[in-house]
Amino acid sequence: MKLAILGYGAEGKSVEQYFKTHPYENVAPKDIEIKIFDKFTDAEIDSLGLEDYDVIFRSPSVPPHYDFRKFSDKNHGSSDEESYKTTFKKPYWTSATKYFFEHCPCEIIAVSGTKGKGTTCSMITALINSINAKAYAGKSDAPKTYLVGNIGIPPLDVLDEIKEHDNVVYEMSSFQLWDLHQGSSVGVLLRIEPDHLNVHKDFEEYTFAKSAISRYKTKNDFLVYFEKNETTKALADKSVARKLAYPIKSESPKLKELLDALNIPGEHNRENAEAALLAVAARFFSGDLELMLGSEFYPALKDGLAKFQGLPHRCEFLRELNHVRYFDDNYSSALPAMDVALKAFEKYPTVLIAGGFSKGTDAEIKARIFSAKNLEKVILIGSTKEILAEGEDPKKYELADSLDDAIKKARAAAEKVASADRPAIVLMSPGFASFDMFKNFTDRGEKFTKKVMELK
Image 1 (cartoon, rainbow, N blue to C red):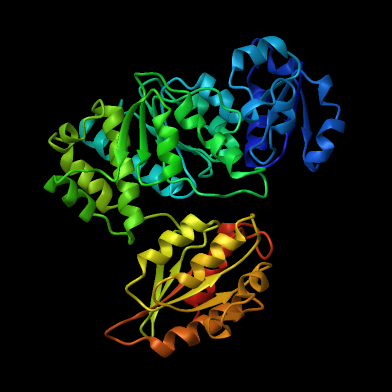
Image 2 (image 1 turned 45 degrees about the vertical axis):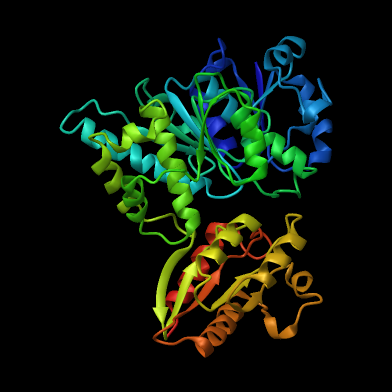
């Protein structure tokens, strides 16, 4: 049997390691010939000779357009997986995500949206772990919670460990959902805004990919969704699943007490917490939030949210110096993330560091930057800085040649307006991808953090 892997990032490497020791269907590892295709363009895929392979694992970075072309031009791809397998047996295109969904023995809580996925997934994981810590105190058979997917842990790395009574929380990007034809018992759809339009051919295709969370549901499954977003609501309306909407319409003092226990800033994080609470209610309390709030697990839920510290590079407080507070929001690579970060600091004079590698949403981000409340100045960096500055009042922005230069200019602008009574904010929330100046958003955030912590 010949197995091809398209893309050799973390997920591609995970697929390779997995099938070196595991059979594919009924084919033993010793009889599986693995071929890795690492560096190629989308235009070169048709010339790779893939027709000679039995199964092809697509990495998330590889669009499935060529796969879709084989059997349907409608709706950006067929939704009939069984028809696909029957009609086109060789090669069969799949992914680590699809394989994991087909073989995972426990319930999956799948989360997607444009931004907030990682935080929401981590909150869900923290809440489940708090519940299990109370329910299984002193017992050795406590279920485990596995946080996998786009957040950084390839799912096949832990597939062997997962037991039937465990829980999986899966952070899913549009690239992982693109050709998925199987649902989860609990799905969570956060707000959806234009993103990755440098890969998806339009917003419709991006939305179609996200819709896999809501499309492949049964009447027994649950869908948690953000009701204030028109795109998210439209997808939810089409789903047959039992629906739980947030922001939650409840005057319950216990719910307010839970949300007030959060120690991370921003209304968006309260919304993420509401989504997480509903997901847990769906998984363990048949979707009955009031039943969950009145249960013996309420203190555990409160403790789980109170101890949640947020994720690195997501509106992460770094330090205060000369009445200026520095925040690292370098995970922000799209408008929704930048938008919620700016709103979180509307009460403070704010200097924003923004810009980077374009993903096709320059105009929308530019409009949001220069209309933000209490924005003292924006320091523009990266390959989009001239585009963002074009036609704007020069008093509102400065161009920076490097990260060091950006921090220096941001500090000077913030210290001019900072006081003991009203601290100023330096917020690095780029709104763009990082690849023009950095390896990835983690590299960008770590470098920003290091330089800020070295300020004197």
